[in-house]
Image (cartoon, rainbow, N blue to C red; front, side):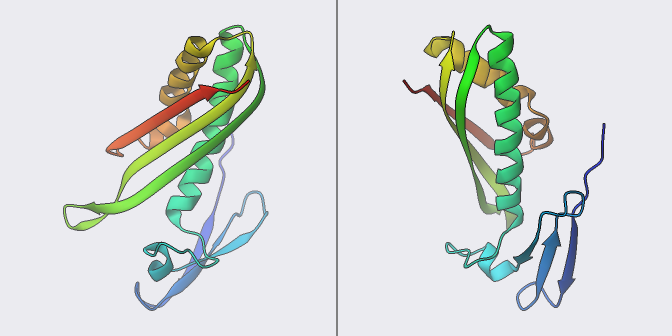
Length: 146
């Protein structure tokens, strides 16, 4: 299996500094990061580690769920997944306190219970979910759409 690489160049202190995250393996982009915008409600055109984790988790979950649906005898027509990653405080330090996965799917061959079962299996089986096992709470809201 391949190894993927990202690189960050940072200048300055935590509060005054800033950096650029480069997606080195894919070469699809370089993105600005800084702590004040990371901790603010409005990201103001910068990304954050939490947003990058959300992207990784939603993409991995989509792949895992597609696989689980197929194993259950279903045929995924479309899946829409969002991952909300919350940065909070724990023991007086910044900590990812919660991840909320939401999936809406159009699937042939599975009922709501079958879809929920596949989604739960994807949540526990996706490699990114496993890597994030130290997060206090990972929730899942899964529903079929007609």
